Image 1 (spheres, rainbow, N blue to C red):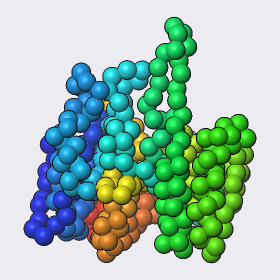
Image 2: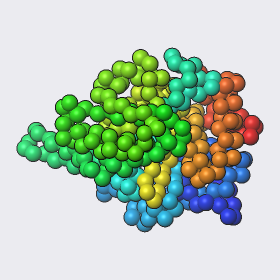
Image 3: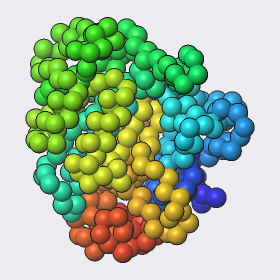
Image 4: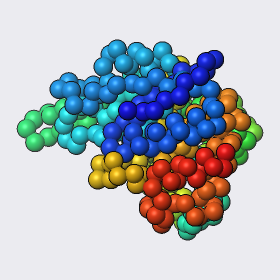
Length: 338
């Protein structure tokens, strides 16, 4: 049960703590928001992860999420090979969250192979191989449909160039495999090129996704904003996370026309759930993205500075970052810097 502090004249946020370590890392965010007096009201959404049906959230709860416009989600467990659909896929589909935005920026105090990594992966979030349209053609043969529509290609390409323009980025790179999937990925490239013509101040290039992955791990500074279809984005964004220290340091946001959900993309780690060992940094950084989305820049900057200060200092780190601090100790160290 989350300990919540509510304020008047605040924005209502859908709180989806998740399962496993989710409630622990979510509580860390709640405590830090409380310490910085962020003007939000948490509206806790009930999950139905053990229901016999296919949806992880009931129709009544998803309507609350829709009405609140903005949400923050902790890690959730997805059954393998059966059970309910992925929570992430469900929310993206129900709320038409067409763009997944995953910044990968080097974190102070976390030593990796590369310094000064500053990449953004923008992934089409609603179609492709993750459309959920698969069936058994004949016994032993499964057909999984890759759906690509002009509308989806246009809106994610538009978002990528708008993002680059808004944040002073220099280049957009489109990742694809049009050499093999000539019609599907070909349509994606065609629409991205059309959008790019409206942004002559921003560079544009196209790369085969396999070639791009090799370039990324050899020299991540070759790229800036990267836009791509769904499956490629899922893989490439995790590659980028590895460049800065892993998914535990990577924020994520899912953006639609009317709704936005920000989330930690790492697993629910049931093996350490309830042991006060989890690292809440990814969800914290995602909550900072959320605050900026809400134009609460002062609160976002204050929390980000405190998180970076603790990590750079190196005294209070969780076990996954080479330290021995508990979730609670790490959270208190951040609060002490606010």
